[in-house]
Length: 325
Ligand code: GLV
Image (cartoon, rainbow, N blue to C red; front, top):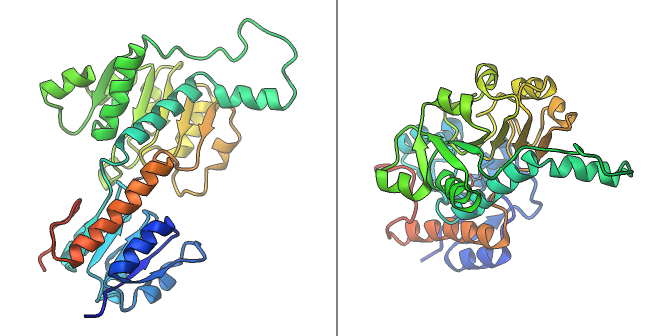
């Protein structure tokens, strides 16, 4: 029996490509440049499966042009690049990569919080520029982490990881806001208390965003929300671009209406709003929260294993929709 054909849309670990090649005829993106939608459609012709990396839009137009496509395995936990209704209607399975990245991403959220509140990159730039001439009592004095109040918006697996780190590691008082409340047992494990979004924004010393991007979460943090925050507060976004109104954030940072921000994701990334680039009180990283070698390998393997399970007719590991075949 001939092997199904699949498309791997960006470079991934060679060992995962080798594994896929045992089961599939694989076309991969050797140039590793994101394909324009037209080229993606052309390359998907005759492909029954695709491994995407989160940046490729899978929508009704693409699905209509690729009638042989049956599954798209996203190498990301977020899948806002999928038009899930269109995929389900077209009978196309989607999968993602939850769990394997939760702790790594929570580590990074905490690293970004620390770097931002303690002004690590700003002070490093100062040092590298040769500007450090003497000690000064308030030089790069930042915000306290231990004992402060940590507000988490989005309390899924990654949010819970951030909460545990804050509460157990740094003695922070953790409050959270989420679509649904955690069970009392989970709240106790995370030492986290549920509050309204307004209370969280008004009272938290540090706000970390870890919620999925949907039409409903677009600009969860815009000018009105920034206006509620403390002038000493830190905002960290490890969720998705679009959850924060980047222009409003740049203005709030410029006017010191909040103290600082740490951003791993951006509206329209990889473009970054030029106003953010010009500000000293923001730490910027290129969407690397899950980027450790082990975690990225686990994500690639999970995406590959979903493709293999699907074509072997076995249960999917991490489906995100239930199309009727
Ligand atoms: C990364 O942003 C992911 O969704 O895995």
